[in-house]
Image (cartoon, rainbow, N blue to C red; front, side):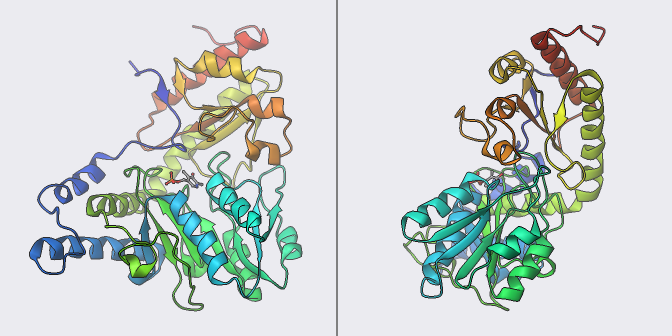
Length: 390
Ligand SMILES: *Cc1c(COP(=O)(O)O)cnc(C)c1O
């Protein structure tokens, strides 16, 4: 028996992998020291653990350890990157470029900067969710400071062309930030190859704990300066004050290590489960798929069902499948998803959408059962004859 509701919301968050938990536990009890305590072994032990975790994360990105700043998650990392660059380079310009389909943790800091007198260009996307590089080229101005484009979209899973964007930013001497919250541990993220100057990470989308993330900040070619957004004890080279949390940092580093080690096999497995789910839905329902079908995360499937009442669909599925329906990832708000709107969807079609997020602990049986539940629920709502035997 599959436990209900079946969890298919891995783009919202994931359970902690037991191997990650195991790596974290000693740092809560035996090795509880404050890594900033320089006068005794408790502090030294904690500092040594963090040093190792920092080196491991840096290696995962092809970066150096001094370029990794720990934060509370991707929201904070995005805020530090965007507001930190804007403030530090104020004298050089006041223009930023981002994309309409970014997470609110990028869009809201940009809107905040607009209130302070900055100008932000919000690039549109094609119907497949991809940024058009010609639009990016046309958006650059003499005073552009920063381009912020996410690696993988949290709603439709689309992978933006980071290397191409990075090269264009490099040509113009503009800094390039990417929100890598959904991408780290799932696709290769080499900051040198991709030309990324700032990269935001979080642990809880990849089987690590909530409340920990990091910002990669390039220190050479070019050396990026940031204005700190949290002031205090001068931790993290003065960029982000606050006592470091060794157990959380171990959790982040271990989650990334496992993600990289298992990336290829797990990506292929999730891709197969996702493709099978889509084939079944497409065979039984009048559905359309949102976002580019190949250039996307393997565990993600986002669909719209024209004519179905989004609220009724969400309610009908609630006891059976835990996924994001209609207004994905907007903290319980019922406004239609800004990502689906950017694809050109009407409010009604955006509401009539489902995001399936498959993950490491999702089984073929769960996907099969969830697919059956969705097909039956939608057929009932649309008044279609049921096409699945029971
Ligand atoms: C989840 C997510 C965030 C927010 O990360 P937190 O660590 O929860 O603050 C930012 N960007 C994207 C793309 C996300 O998926």
